[in-house]
Image 1: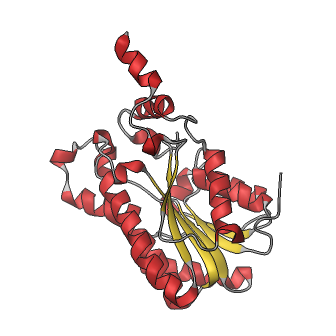
Image 2: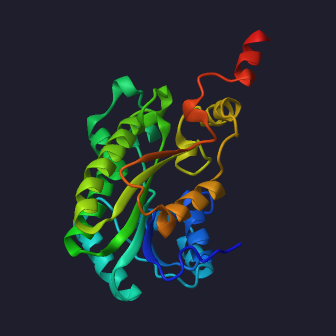
Length: 271
């Protein structure tokens, strides 16, 4: 059901790969709520995914390939997006993450540092690059909103989440630091949403991910938040209903982040 929360708003959505992607669900919900937007992903991801199918279902949204670690690509993206959308934008979703160390099965204590740099660049520094590009081009309207997707491993140890935990910590720090400066100049708000473990293409590559999901489900008073619920939360953060929320890491995890232990988990130790 649409409430026209984003009617008249325009934006850029990074990271929709396939219908398992949270960014995909955000695009669908943003379209339902009246937004216009450009879809983007790295060229290699676009070849692997189904982004054109998503674009068709979202009012034939324009798709612009862009490597978020390449400043020239980002400059071209923002120029073409603002031209296509008829001016400044109102929201950005950063849903980008990849770890070569995870993909190659490297243990955290055996980190390959070339891979590590790529993890940080793709999964965290890319947010700074996106924000810097938008900031220098003055591409976002006053009171605009930027949301990046994070995970609780930024603050808690999840051994097999590997160097992605470091990347999420950096992502959240960039959110606070750039959020201050963008807020001062343009009232643009920047936040991260720390989502329940969600079965996406990226998440499924983490060792023991199914166990992550099951454990979080048993620990969370409300259960795990799904991708549709996350998309709804992102839409609310893009809307004018959350104009004074910025520089925050917002847990969207059914209460998992503040639960020490649950009765379900205790019962399993009694068996």
